[in-house]
Image (cartoon, rainbow, N blue to C red; front, side):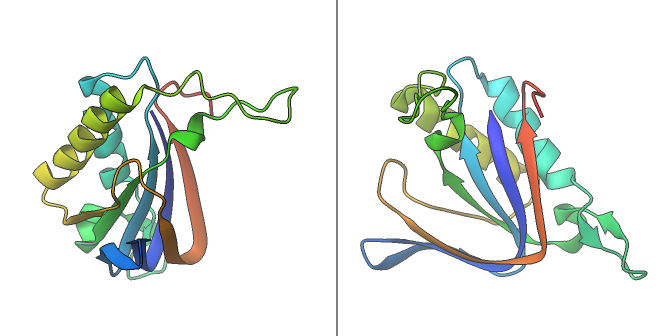
Length: 149
């Protein structure tokens, strides 16, 4: 599983001209599901994102997590995080999970975040979405369950 985690002051996703999900301060999480991923991976990645200490404390140090600041998360499925463009112009997506599996694990990731008490907004799986956000910092963290980066 791969995630692009961005600290935001606000974010929203629009589908067919309508706001599908919107948050204030918190995390914008673009989530890609790999074909080898499991429920355990989804839960572990949700825990990792929720506990990342990337919010400022009273001294301005990145020392607080999403849970500490009581922020929200906007989670958007993005299979293109598994694009492989090495040596070619058209990316391959063979490492991405098939849609049924990806959707199930995407939902499990969301449920795991909610289980931690986080308010989660989402996009709509397998639709064309427009994502708007204000990245604070800017701060962007890449997570990979295989720890390739």
